[in-house]
Image (tube, rainbow, N blue to C red; front, side, top):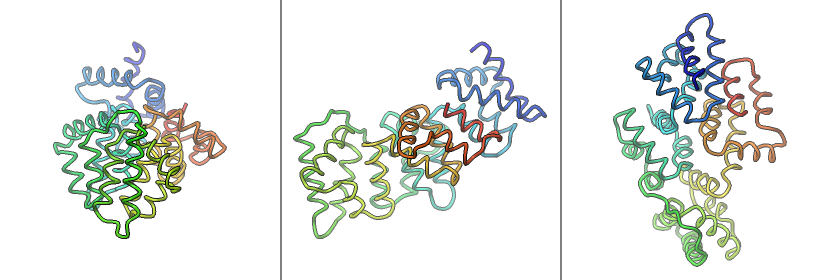
Amino acid sequence: MRLDSYKIETVKCLSTDRQKECAEVLIEMATKRAWFQRDELTALYRKRYGERISDSIKAHLGQTLFTDALRWCFEIAPRRDAEWLYKAMEGLGSDAKIMCEIICSRNSRQLETIKIAYKELYGTDLVKDVESESYGSFQKFLIKLLTVPRMNEPADETRAMELAKDLYDAAGGRWFTDKDKDKFIEVFTTESKPQIAAVYSLYKSKFGSDLICTIEAKFKAKLKEALVFLCRWILWPAELFADEVNKAIGTDQKALIRLILARGEMDLENIKQAFEKKYKKPLAERIAEVQGGSDLFSLLLLSSLN
């Protein structure tokens, strides 16, 4: 850390003819240090220079994808998530996929810290902004996740059977009403992950139907995609994000770096294993084939995987 305290000054030479050399030093620091070490360096930089390191990086490098990727490495997770959510709702329309990805895959404690960071960054309330950028049952789904803490209890088979029956009855009626939709929303946004896993298993064994297939048949548009995403995250998170990363490779660099950085502090190793198992190739090798590795963005991306 003592050496890093000197290296951190290389931010100041990012706008000089030593840009590549200095950027490579920062990439090493950003990808080879634990989050708490990066946080210490960020605090040291702010004390020394009176500004956030992420703001300095942006000032020296300008607005590029590499700039965003590098400064995100030096931001704490709640601030990153808050920025991604803000940008997903910025301007005309909103990016429901990003909103769903972040809100569905963060636990209740993480969502609380994101709401605080969002308020600090933008001076507005995240819940109110989400309300204004969504509607109907999809809105209800997102707001429940943001405002109602998920239970933490272990699975209870008796209760899981009751919930599975409730969902089966809700899906089986002639008319799939808002009340029926609300039952699915209630279960998936508030029940504990072990309980939902038990509900999924019992639904299949007792009623001969796959719960995800039921959701896909009964729901439409954004809410269908959100419920399927949430269900897969609860049941098979590594496999879900392996698929999301695979879809982003070569098609959506912003999504790719967002996924790698976000999951790097949670379950990236599991995702790498799931990716290799399904796609028969290590994730880093697959990305290198598509991205190359000579530019700074690709170097940061690949360094984040090792």
